[in-house]
Image 1 (cartoon, rainbow, N blue to C red):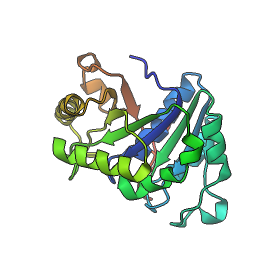
Image 2 (spheres, rainbow, N blue to C red):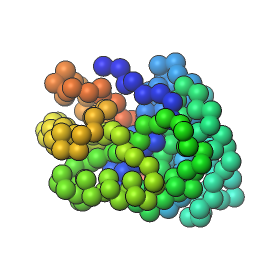
Image 3 (cartoon, rainbow, N blue to C red):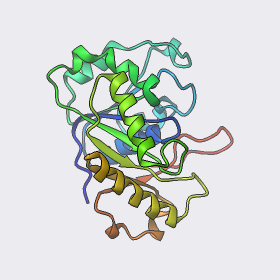
Image 4 (cartoon, rainbow, N blue to C red):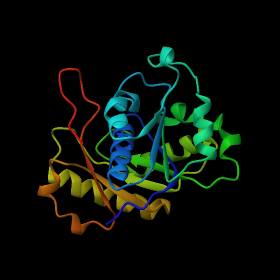
Length: 230
């Protein structure tokens, strides 16, 4: 199944949901499919595992990466590049925005309210049901409410990202997918895609899923490991 996302797509979620990894891999996949892709890193809270860490690989693919000014790349400061507002006003085929984790990270979106005014967007909540706080329907709904309140925007879709990194099993994928399917029913939000490690894909029958599958090639890794090649 094709991942049908276009225009402005905002990726949100709690810390540890894997939203940045999903954002990076979604950008790479759509670029490989021929789309014109831009991605902005708006995670101004968490100093680790942010989209900007993969800017080299993304740039090589021809993806425009919008980051804070160079001198602020390692700073935890609320600094926004005017280019972000520009890509919202003229999103092209696909403009991805990787927002910060939880409600604190999503607060920066509220500062862009004027740029979003009268513009359509998809705001997708990444859910990893194998992590604390998102292992229950109530927990996921609580995080949704907090992010929406902080950002002054509305989440209108879900991304399932069940994983325990290297310890993930095919059963984890299936159980996690089933959980997010239940969350979809409970929340009224459509499940837009399921993220699966590329190494596990051959061990899972993708035809059993009702949504598109996004293969994940890990880019955000500790210093002693190498990122996977796109």
